[in-house]
Amino acid sequence: MSEQKLFTEQADLLLHYLNQQRHDWLNHFQVLLGYLKLGRVEEGEAYLRRITQEIQQESAIARINCPPLSVFFLTFHALHHDIRLQVEVEQQLDLARLAIEQETFCRLVFDLVFALKNHAEDAQDEQPSLLVSLRDGKDHVLIRFDLIGRVKAAGSQAVELALRSVRDYGVAVLERVHNDKEWILEISIPCRT
Image (cartoon, rainbow, N blue to C red; front, top):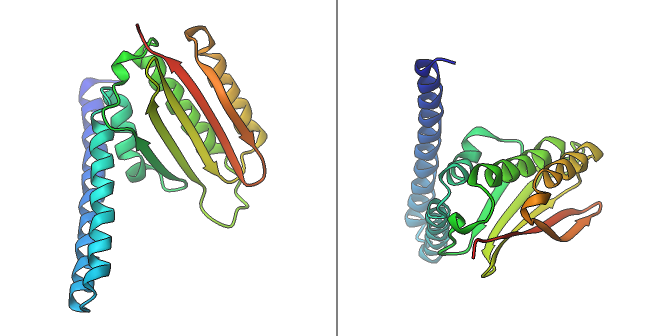
């Protein structure tokens, strides 16, 4: 792929993301204006607090010291509409401390998210919702994937394949729950000493 074509594709994606962000902000302002016009100050304040928390979480995501993963999480909703992704990052999390190479770590997270996104069962009452939580465990980082909904067998196979690709890096599975209502995977990734 030529550099010009790659630049054009990246510029198109960035423009799409910025347009989505602008649209979201306009919606937030309209909701707040509606609350003000109706004299519903308490509801407006609650809405503003929720938006502020979302912005703080986006800021924490941007500061995890892993730019490809930050961009992936922050642009996900602009590019994918078939699953709701929520990301919770502990403040001051530094992924540069991981013992695994950044590219390998990102590939693992991308593969796990897309395995769940692409293999969530279609016949569900609501859009699948995936919560990805990242926490600092002192000498390791904990990552939890919590999907509300069911995953097809092919999704579980894709997850196993992704986990096998990093078994030599000391990645450990701490929790695994798969039933009709939820799908949970928590893994631990060691940090450099």
